[in-house]
Amino acid sequence: MFSDRLLQHLKNARSVAVLTGAGVSAESGVPTFRGEDGLWKKFKPEELASIDAFMANPDLVWEWYSERSRIIREKAPNSGHAALAEMESFFPEFTLITQNVDGFHRRAGSRNVLELHGNILFSRCVRCGVKSDKVESGMDRKDPLCACGGRMRPDVVWFGEPLPQDVLKKAFAASEICDVFLSIGTSAFVHPAATLPVVAKQAGAYVAEINSERTVLSDDLDETILGKSGEMLPRLVAELRNLIDRT
Ligand code: OAD
Image (cartoon, rainbow, N blue to C red; front, side):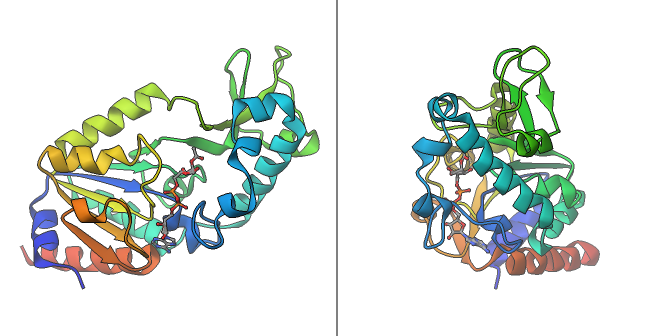
């Protein structure tokens, strides 16, 4: 199932970095972006996930985000999230970098989480920048306003926008120093997130991918494990637990 090389690298690792994408939440019932049933097959990102779209039609954008956050509130983290939360305790340094905006990693118990694309359960004022966790206001009223009079927007990164710089800096730093890097459930199409496994590899880390299909990065990484993260990650954690117990 898992190569000896991967297990030995993990056993000896001091620092591990993990990048997750929508595939990790697929088994929780949250749709991915690309692929057969992907969100971007049904909706146009430029009409929903850009500041221009929001300013032109905030009601429509809020409706879409409110619906997605409603789905996320109703769903729960899966066995893959739980396995990653447990994995954190095996290593002196463990950084979980996620492109997901669902907050499932924290809900599953992961502590050192870097949310590259924000969090859909929060909103932020376009004028004064204040954040709020009351996304429900976006459901009650389609175009919610901040106390300062500015528009509240979902606290997620949209196309054409920069990622939060402090978070991105930490993600690059973790990728550069880690001994093992795992890229899980991401198509690796969206940058700069997709650059992180490459940065880790160039810096000398052992880089493995866990995904239900091969990706654009597969040829450049040390190994690809094909399978569902909700099945593969608990198995990997069980093998690691055994290895660590035996030493
Ligand atoms: P994608 O939808 O592009 O890719 C999800 C990947 O997960 C695909 O390669 C699937 O084959 C794989 N997959 C599906 N189910 C899986 C499972 N159960 N176990 C393992 N792998 C599985 O999602 P991301 O790569 O996360 O950006 O997309 C990156 C960004 O594009 C998102 O963060 C979002 C989107 O536009 C923003 O919102 C800024």
